[in-house]
Structures are given as structure tokens and as C-alpha cells.
Image 1 (cartoon, rainbow, N blue to C red):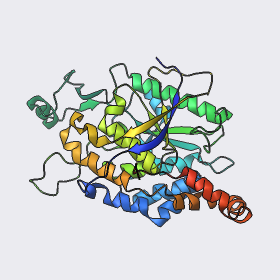
Image 2 (cartoon, one colour; image 1 turned 180 degrees about the vertical axis):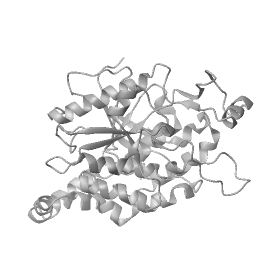
Image 3 (cartoon, rainbow, N blue to C red; image 1 turned 180 degrees about the horizontal axis):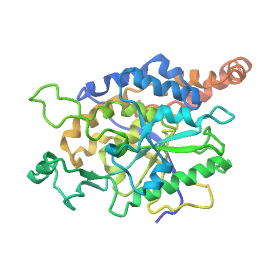
Image 4 (cartoon, helix red, strand yellow; image 1 turned 90 degrees about the vertical axis):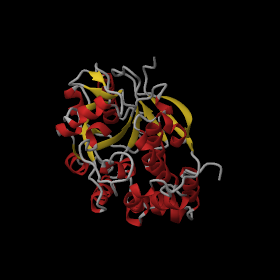
Length: 365
């Protein structure tokens, strides 16, 4: 079993051209992520992060909510959204301030994982087969169904330990260059926050169907904002298991991170049973992302098919890391950078950097 965290570099997104299925789900979010104001907001500074989080709300999307690592450690488990342990992401960024380089002390990570017990009913103490009469009856009676973790809360404990380990590494400036930690705050005031689906999306609020004949169950409105939540995060952290990379939801989250997140071309992996480490080195490897639609037959809820198709399509159409947009972001991050790269180097060096850092979410082109 691996005991050291890993950083996985994503070399390309191996997805195929998508259709229009479910495209309306994220139209508002997609328009936001393609807008000029969103793309000129700097992704590493506190001011830029605040602007992006505010734009999510101004676009009519649900505000991003996060769970502090302190609260996760205190609870020793991943809480459900109705318990109210999450907090507003913008408020957290404002409260925590910035370090000397104007990097936000509130470091938000997007947590990607496979639910351990998706149909578990704690009250009945057993799994309820999806769509069964027993499942429907339990939901109708108001019983809570689902748990992303195992009975020992192994995932929560490992994640809390990872969050504390990462915070200590940032405060000490202990991480080597070229990791996800680059361009994150280095101060004693750093605080780690998590976006976790189970507690940060409203598990009880549903969007109404467009018609009574529309198949499947209603979708949570937070899902429509998922690409924006990924884009507003400092990085993606995964609970990687042998089954993880084959799950359509996990693939979709990795694809969204690659398409919209500044550090989304690298994935931090929390080893199972992680309890901390005295060092801050990370093993490295590379992967090629796979198409989420290839494994939709494994979905617990088959009605999630159009949602997966929609999110995949939004990612494929992303221009967030086109060469031009990377050039604009990197050459305007500060007055010094703008002068050094655009004037002294006649835009040449900045252009080469932008070309090297651009991403193509359409492979084979």
C-alpha cells in the first residue's frame, strides 16, 4: 500500500466529440466560464479568487460552499449537507486573508472520490438496492440513503490527515518546485478547505423536471455549477483506488478539472490509510484521462447518463486554456511580469510559455 501522496500529471484528455444530450444543464455555467470577466480574473491571487466566487453567484448559480479541514478532523467523518457544517467559500476567502504575495490563505481543494456505500441506509443498517421498492419506501419515509465513506470513516480520516500535512508543508515552504503547491500561500495562516459533494451540494434540494414525462429523477442545482466550482478551486485531490479511474463520475470530475482548473493538469492522490508523513516529497506519474461516457453502464443511477454527457460536453468545449487566454493571464498577472515578458522579451517568451501551458481537451486535433 502506498504511504506517500502522489502527484499525477494529466497529459491529455482522451474524450470523443460530444453531442447535444443534456447540454442545457450547464448552459449558464458554460457561458460564465467562457466570459471575458471570468477569464481575466487571475486564478492564483486572492482578489482574482474573490471575483470568480462572486461571479458564480451573480450568474444565478448556487454559491460555492466548502468544508474546512479543521471541521473534518473534528468530526472524524464526512458530514451530509443538511447538517450545516459547510460554509460559504467567498466568506472563507475573505476571512482568511492573503499572504505577502497576495495568494489566498484559504486554499480550496476539489475532492474527487468514489462513494463507498451509495445505497447505505444508516437507520435500517443495510444497503438498499437502487430503484427497489424498499429503496423507494425508505426515501418516501424520509430515511437518509447513501454514505460516501465506509463504516470506519477511513476516507475522512485520511483526507483530514492529508489536509493537515499539506497545510504544514505550505507553512514551512517544504514542497519542491513544480508541484501543485507552487503559487499557493506560504504562511502560518494557511487553512485548507474541501469541496466535497456529500456535504457541499444540497442533497435535499432538487431542480424541477421540465415536464411530467421527463424520465429520471430531478437533478440537484449545484451540479449545474460543478465546472465553476472546479475552476474556482486551487487543485483537485483524489481518493484513487483500482476502481476509481473506471467510474464515470470520477472521470467526469477529472475531465472538468483538466478543462477549467489552473492546476487541474495535476492530480494529488491521497493514499488509503494516510496518517501523515514527516517529509513533503511526492511520487510522480502520468496518466491519460478517459472518456466518462465509455463507462456509463456502471452508473448506480442510470438517470445520471445525460448529466455525465452534459458535463463532458461542457469540458470538451472549454477554451479556458487556449494559447491566447493563457498568454493574456500570464502576461498580465503583475506589472513586473507584463513588462518583463511583453516589453523586454517582445512577447516572445510569454508566447512560448503560453503555448507550453495551453491545453487541448479535444485529443487527436
